[in-house]
Image 1: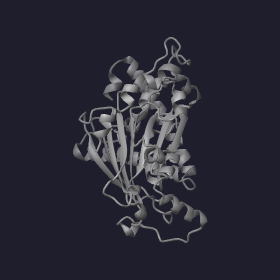
Image 2: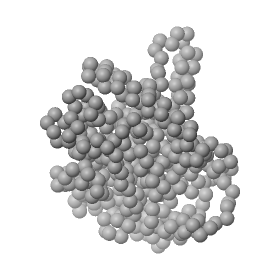
Image 3: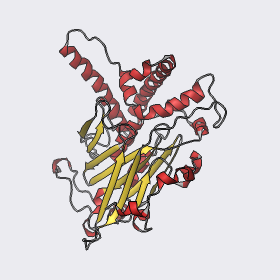
Length: 376
């Protein structure tokens, strides 16, 4: 709210933004109601919208109990605004270049406006444990947010929701039932883009940083009216994903705003190779009864027990474009066990589309041998 009151330009942008998010919310509600029964992803979006509405109701009732007169009501549009924090930077770029009368639709044209994001980085390293005779792995993971960890309020949240895949309560419960993250009051996802996801045979981490993009022409193919806020997309993916591949597939839907580069690591595959996925979540009362296995199921189980497949996935998104891939072998077989992510695209297809030059960021992108040696 304070950022919307800075000047007349900010007020106009926030008015446009609130109207867009409100229309988008109403459209998502209609689509979720129509698709939730047959689409697991949309059912989770439906539940997320219900959670946002519940927060608005809870605030009104709580504030009313605390004092007789509610001095200032927080409308639903403000809850939508808070939960679109990860999308606002992209929407600001779109607004400045494609909505304002003096905006330009041509990237690189005089007057075109891009906003370079604050620096953030992730470090991922996989190491074979020397003392382990069964090829167990050790993960070193570091993550810094673009903002300050001490700015304003920040709390650690843990959601343990045994949601179902569909509105039918006889359907299976979602694998990612237990999600821990740091966030801001009133926001239902991580403001730092870091999650620990646990559940029935699922134990993973998810981390993201803003991705660099100098190609504003990509926005020409994006209809922001059809956007799904990033916080809703990532929480839906965290819940329904049975492995890192299905997480990447869910994150590939609606790649409009909230451009990031993500890494997701299956922590279950760090253990000894002959002992992967042998135990279930301790909360057995929510487990589903065993079902007969077919050939496809057996193939999936075989893949699950293969340490070289689906342990590490990278997903990169630009406006209207997304690319994802299993990069486990890159970490384990190619002698390149470390990845420093700082917004420079990992995949060539995304790098070319973004018009970013790796040479301009080479000092920030590569670790020296001495620096790698210190990562133990």
